[in-house]
Image (cartoon, rainbow, N blue to C red; front, side, top):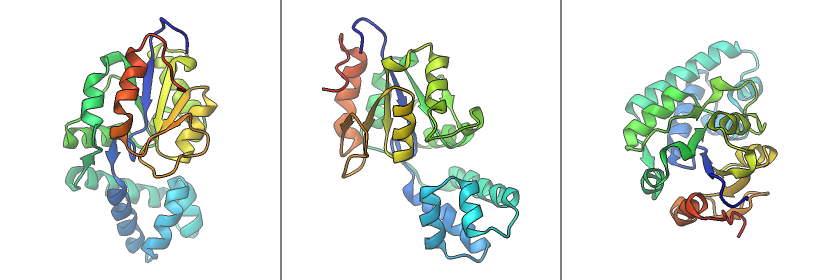
Amino acid sequence: MRPGRTKYVLFDVDGTLIDALSNQRKVWGTWAELYGLDADEVYQVALRTRPMETFAQVAAERDPRECLTTLHELEDEDVRTGVYAAFDGASELLHGLPLKSWALVTSNYEHRVRGRFLRTGLPVPGLIVDAAAVEEGKPSPVPYLLAAEQLGAEPGDCLVIEDAPSGVQSGLGAGMTVWGVNAAAAVEGVHRHFVSLREAVPHILAFVSGPHGNAAA
C-alpha cells in the first residue's frame, strides 16, 4: 500500500455482508423438486459451480435456458418474500465508510442485491458490479478489475472482502489485498482471516482511514 493514496473496499455480498445461505438452500431445494431431483444432491453441486454448470451436471437432459429461467423466478420471489439478515457489523461498517470508497462485486444480479439491501436496511453504494456486467465471473479477476476501473482506483489500493474460494481467487488474481470473513478456517490465499465480519469491522475502517494502509499487518 502507498501512503497518501485513497483506499477502496470491494465487498462480495452473499455470505459476506448478507446471510443468504438458508435462502439459497431453499431456492435450490424448490428448483430440484420441480425437476424431480434430490434437493441435497443438487445443492451440493450448486455450492461448487455456477448455475449453468450445475444444470449440466444434475439435469443434462433439460434445456439449460429453461432451467435458468425457473431458477431466476424462484430467486426473485425469494427476494420479495424470504427472510434476510445482514451479518453483525455490516450496517455499522457500510455506514462508516466514505460513500465513494466502496462497491459491491457480486455473482448475483443488481436488482436482487438492491432488494436484499432494502430488506435488511443496508446502504446501497454507487457502484454494483453484478453478473450481467461481466462475461467472466469469479474466480476470474475481471469483476474486481472492472470495479476498480469504474471507481478510478488502482488494484493495489483496493481491499477485497470475501467468504468463498472463488471470490478470493478473483481478488488475488486482480492484484488486490484480500481478507476473508465468516468462516472458521481461512480460505487459502487470503492476506488476513477473520472468523466473523464483526471482528473485521475496525480493521476495514482503519484500512480506509489509516495513513499507511497497513493491509497485511
